[in-house]
Image 1 (cartoon, rainbow, N blue to C red):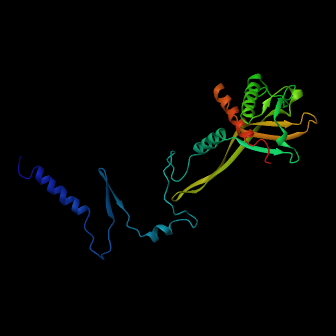
Image 2: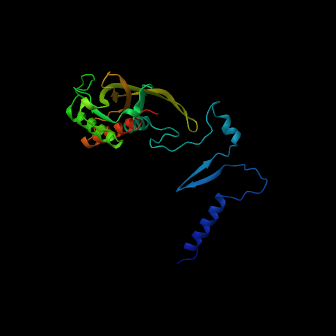
Image 3: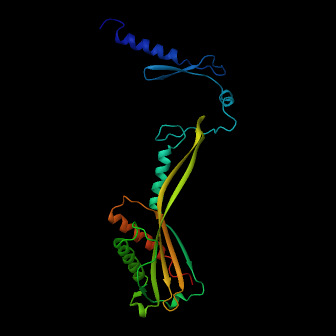
Length: 250
């Protein structure tokens, strides 16, 4: 190998590296921008004090650093990502509510029967079908049996059970925009999402007076792409959450 070959190149590289990153003398102010090596390219980083950066910020600009996101925009979750989160949350959540007659004696209820005739509700082909009817009745019978209630004929029951199904269209709107992350501005824009919401209501009725004693409801976003098994599981979950609050507190 000729003199000054590989060894000479290493020494030259070492000197070049030392020249690129000179040692700072304590107390000395930097008079030139420091250099940063990124791969093969070299970039000059401005040696501006923090006060100079702050002077360029808008009065209400946030001071936090940008947060990496899937859409590549600093500090901002993409609109499609936001709507997907809302949709998934809605599909997985069942909101329940309960109302009852405080004067009713729930401790005297031991046997039940289904209210005779078809269940009440608006005529809607999306919910008016025998498959859904069977799923609701099976789930209610299972939950009441687990609570110790016995199913009997209508003439011998302490209370009657009925259910209603209601479908409603909903629209959610969200406005996004303004300052995100570190000096990133986006004009405000409003996005909306329309979906169907289903509500299952379970009624407990006095068979002698037809008086409503207790009502529970469960509401959730409808997923039309669900498989039959997923729909059955959804009904079971809704009925279990509703009847978890039956009977009324003593």
